[in-house]
Image: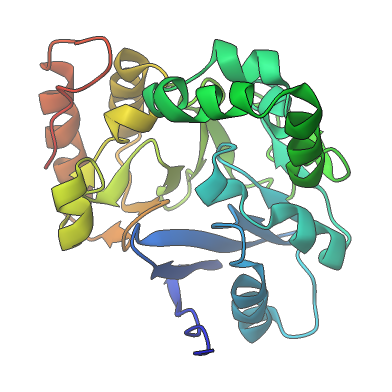
Length: 276
């Protein structure tokens, strides 16, 4: 079997390291230092844990992160969070609206289903029957390690950052912002690679983009969240997919993208979300 490629690690701001991006979806996670210690933001896909752990160790050596923050509980962000948390003996933090999904509450999953859930995932879950579904959920729940945090209170482990609720892609999606140097870690609320269509995904096209409409719970709310993030005038945009965007023109680029988003007429499923 071919060995999996070592993940790249790049310092993108003081105490902020980007791990990745990697894979077909240009997944990226972030290791952040603050006064209490180190925190991992997002955890990639299932199976990515060992490579993420190795990347973290290359920065902090024998030390362990004090916690894992998830921007939202999708498979490409929850990933191996449970395994990593057990290894590091730390909690996984999620916003209150994401907690039911982290606990694999089937009613909550149905209530906040995105188009892809409605077309594929939920029918598969119903077809497998309750007993088998509960067995699958038991293997994937974050129940042993998850804790919720107040999005309007201090960010766990990152007292110099603020949490910015950015619902739309999911009901409880959050982003993280450091006001002192305007670094934004935006999850899937705002990304820097074109994962919005299959063609762009396959071509690895770069550029600001909102979350894909087919994996987004409420596209109108997602556009409003982009406008909220633009108002922060970020100097660095570190999304969950793509290479971080930085430089003197970053606030202007984000503002222009948000303006185009705000002019887009809502089409329910979000098919009309523009890209940059």
